[in-house]
Length: 219
Ligand code: NI
Ligand code: MN
Image 1 (cartoon, rainbow, N blue to C red):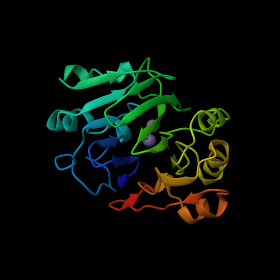
Image 2: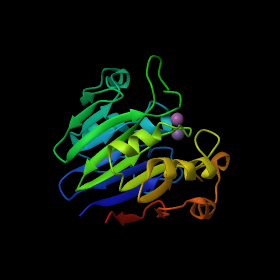
Image 3: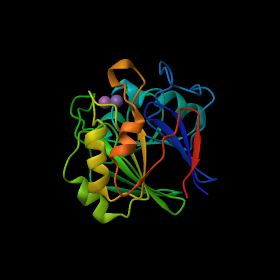
Image 4: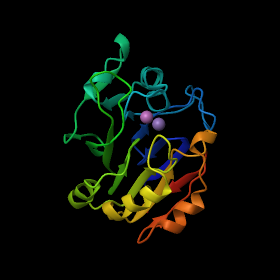
């Protein structure tokens, strides 16, 4: 059984019953956060880029949980804090105790000099989950969907900094994903969206609108 736990904005945790894979752990200062950085659990932490609303509390949570952080090398030293890390880069795949993590492109700034923003394809609990990170729509999302049959795509829909519902619906088509979960919206007014607008636009996939603090079994 694989559970998606949504903590607000772009922070979520995938739990296969053994590993807890926390992604983009922005909790302190996140107006949607439903758990504190002191209480959240993780065995792995995946980080798409170094903007504060993604890297968030990663080093503190990693130290407290003895978790392994995975991200681009440029952000993996955390200013010298002692954290277990796996630095990887676009196109690479890392085998993990739960399955695998593949780092894929995203079209967005990195939040750190010399770095890039990325997305992740995560093999866990017999499912393939794609998290786009912060990104614009791009045609090579088709290639991501060709390599792996994506069971769940987790996509930003907030606009302004990322795709909006129009482009995110096109992304679903490019990816050929079976299920979609929208994130990165309504955290602040600048990324205010009605998720029903996204639901209406998506064709050929089931949309799961998960509210902060809610969980979803990924069947
Ligand atoms: Ni960003
Ligand atoms: Mn962001």
